[in-house]
Amino acid sequence: MVIAFLLLEFTIDSGDQMAIEKYPIIWGVLAMLLLFAVAVEIIAETLKSILYRGLSEEAQLKYEASENARKAQQFSGLKRWYKKLAGGKPMAEEGEIVLDHNYDGIRELDNKLPPWWLYGFYITIVFAGIYLVRYHIFDGTKQAKEFENEMEDARLAIEEYKKTAKDLVDVNTVEVLTEASDLSAGKLIFETNCIACHKVDGGGGIGPNLTDAYWILGGGIKNVFNTISEGGRDGKGMVAWKTELSPLERAQVASYVLTFQGTTPAEPKAPEGDLWVDPSSETTPTESTDQPETVTDSTTVDLTVVN
Image (cartoon, rainbow, N blue to C red; front, side, top):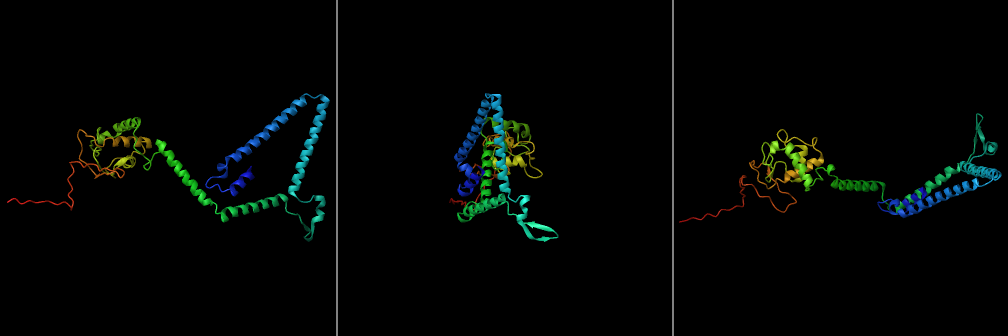
């Protein structure tokens, strides 16, 4: 099976996939053949055991003697194969391969390389030929490229997993949560930790007003999530909550904070920061009347002189 795998992998261009992944039917057939061989062996041994128990004592002794002879012959065959692969001359025949020269009485034998070593060497030559054809003639996918492809696949898989694994969300993957359970959890977190600075209706107190379109560190789910995680402005802003709240809890409270947009608090604080325009939105937020009007250079005034 290992040889079949190597031949498939290095002779068939399966693209970014391994041959075993692209052609699973082949491995299924090999596995079935292996299971069939095991089943046949088990059945044969079972039948032998049943037949042995049905024999007379004398027949059993004869059967045991024949089995021992068969096993001895079998192991003798294995020994012959071992000697053939190991090569070399028996000590009694070493005189035939002793070289003429010697050094201080030390003489050298002219043994041939062991066949197992030669066969392994021949296999490496065949492998090198297949490798040469696959990667240098037919321009197969290089190992570095395979690594990059696998890393990219892993990155995409992680990003896809993060979309459904809420507790692994970060500033790059966070999205507005709209389920009632998430918003209820966000409301509970807000009322437990945030109303001292922003008031229960988001109108603002020590902290800024969360109901208008002006944001100190940017609006939108990603900016709000990042501000909750990393904190506000150095020295005078909100503390970082990333050590106190899990990623899911930060996403929940950030989503709840965005529900204040467009509402009317009881005592709204004056807008702070810059007007936030969502890049993905086609509409521009309406500026608060508390902000001074901006007059551009293109504004013209028509003066009518009344006589």
